[in-house]
Image (cartoon, rainbow, N blue to C red; front, side):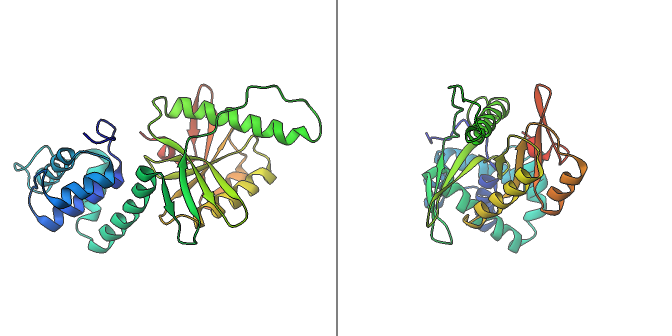
Length: 258
């Protein structure tokens, strides 16, 4: 049994198995070397991978194979299976992301070491109110907001991670990485312009170290004003904010989908 058996399948996993299905054109058994290799990459059992190939067979040849794909995997597969270049790119990106997620470490295209880590927890100790300590107060507020979002978004601890990037002069830490929808999330304590501009730069800096494409978002305690929402739109960065006891986003729920 693989370590990820029982967990929801990521879209990245679908593309790797779908690529195998297209290349082979038939269902494959659990002892097939390529099935075994893919199972190792995905952290799943060969039987799980073999069954998923059967799902692709049932999708492309209704009435044959196993139960066909549904929902977003089906919609995405319909756009990829007839476009070899797009599928090849999706598979290459998927392999890079899954190598990081399942091995816990990779080397980026700019030579930095990139590691998956657990999200930081907030410090429960009170912080004194002094000029110097305001930075710490902001960090504490960010940590608390991050933890609130994590508990709301990922109560089982299956989708949100942190990323540590060993840069030449320091270690960069990505607040949250949502592996299910492939989004880097930077957390800020307020919607002040300077903080949002800083977050934009941080996200762009993180992204250049990764060997795969990612979307970007900023997690905030409230919705930014229209002017700042315009800044994020131009920068192609989404916003997520607290909305009562839950959260909302700037992309019609895309950043919060299951």
